[in-house]
Length: 335
Image (tube, rainbow, N blue to C red; front, top):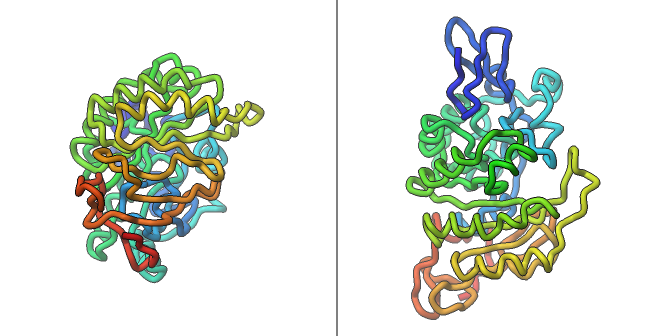
């Protein structure tokens, strides 16, 4: 049978698995090999994932399973995403979606975010998670590479209300050489579709000497959809096959982002301690309306939230936001 969860559209059967190795055929149906099995669950800050325009200051439960439909040469989660899941059964946590939701509530999390590997490899389990999260009033979000079929992209939009899409580069050549897929077009198609249906932020890991030239191309593409899409340029510290590569030069990347800032309202540059480019400014008057602290690999955190009803306190311009400040987690609210 041909799997329809991602654009690989792998031919699979009872003993033959596709690229992600997370689906197989049972009694003539495509099913998950490891339903309700998790690689990790933990607590984090919304800003660290990163979501800068979603329930600022909130505490979230983060989740991951196993496998991926990409084979990024610089993958930082390769020990989970790139290994055969069957080799990792001893380290799997077996928890039902209902149990995870109860745990999130006990830990006073405001949302659950799938962020360790690609959600398309575990969509049936995540559909069940949504049912229980909705009943409990918990928001659901994810990080995805968006190399999904149109049908699975629709499923992502049904399950998750906020989505961060990893747009690794902008050319076929880059995706073939560094990501292991044939084309970037399905990803671009799905960014358009998801941005029309849900709150979307986009993250691009900058790889020294590899994809800096794609920065203006990505900025043009996102601006053509919606100039208010938050874009995170991520200073990647390569692992896996590229662990000996140089780290991106901060000043050089920031210079390349300067032009993008004239075309996109919310451009961020982080994953290094003390970044000056993690705050949100009002697109209308330039006033800083949200201040954050960059903790490098430790993630980011909300510092001061100046908005009033998600509007600039100076000129009243509406700041792009999914939800609003979650004050029970962040007591220092500057007006």
